Image (tube, rainbow, N blue to C red; front, side):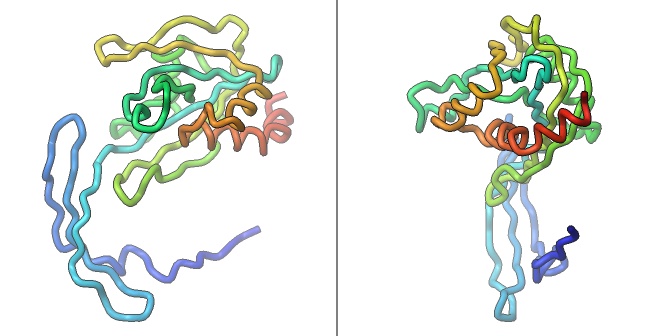
Length: 207
């Protein structure tokens, strides 16, 4: 079913006055000065917003249709300390695209680096803006057909501060961990929910 857009405005209704780089380290932050159209007519005064220019990223949820299991990785995420007892999170394999728009090749590279696994068939799930009020980042999510029978171990690139443990988990257990909020990072939540909704049609395609 084709759904028409409900948006009243587009990029032509934004006046970018100036964009300035205000921090240029591991993260890059730009200050945007802009005006935009108002729903009731007219235009705003100049607004300033600081935006994290992170680039785009990919994530993949490997799925073994034979054993009905998924591969998740565990690593420390220091930002989680503010709201979780343990900052070691269960996540999808993920990584920055670093300007590469061949997202499937980035997915395969990250799977080797973070889990030592070569993926079989890839299936694009969806993409989303991670936090558009504060960053330009868009995440592209994939699932992949994979044989997880011999997967396991510690991976990651030490020179990038990575220490990553792999976990092969029955799909129903992964959903239970999602239900009790043990799994609570956006890419993994969305990926598991997508797989739950589309597993039947995906299996018909793969098998």
